[in-house]
Image (cartoon, rainbow, N blue to C red; front, side, top):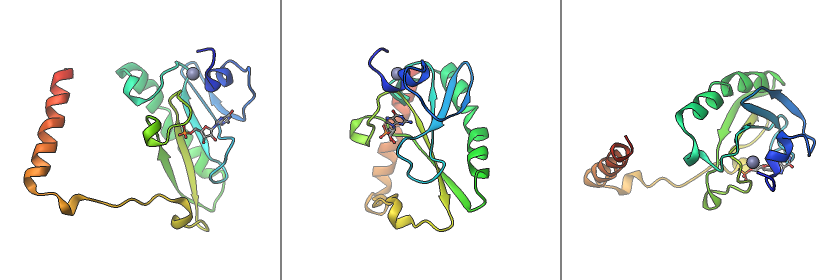
Length: 146
Ligand code: 5GP
Ligand code: ZN
């Protein structure tokens, strides 16, 4: 896609700090490092978000993520964990519409508060009927697709 910033990175029209590249994916440092080592993994095929993946693309991309995550973790002994984040759609804070997975190392010294990974849970406000209805509706959507 010509006006896509990540396609331009794939095509080397824009430079990046590339960590790993093969025929299917590219992994490179996010220009706005949430923490040192913050890496993006993207498919070379332009898809906007997770909703556009088929099984083959999913297999090609997801199979590589654990190995890249392990390498990022080993970058610094102070890294004690890693968040794998994936925003899908503007409403879910996606700002670049070429699918990407954030690998964000978590340091012993960082604070969960500063990271802003907190949300209110609503589970305790739902009845068992609510849970069953949600489950059954999602199952019916899965069955419609297969
Ligand atoms: P999103 O908000 O869509 O989940 O994340 C997009 C990410 O892409 C942001 O974290 C942003 O810093 C990163 N980004 C945007 N433009 C560039 C760029 O030109 N180069 C690199 N390396 N990262 C970028
Ligand atoms: Zn693209």
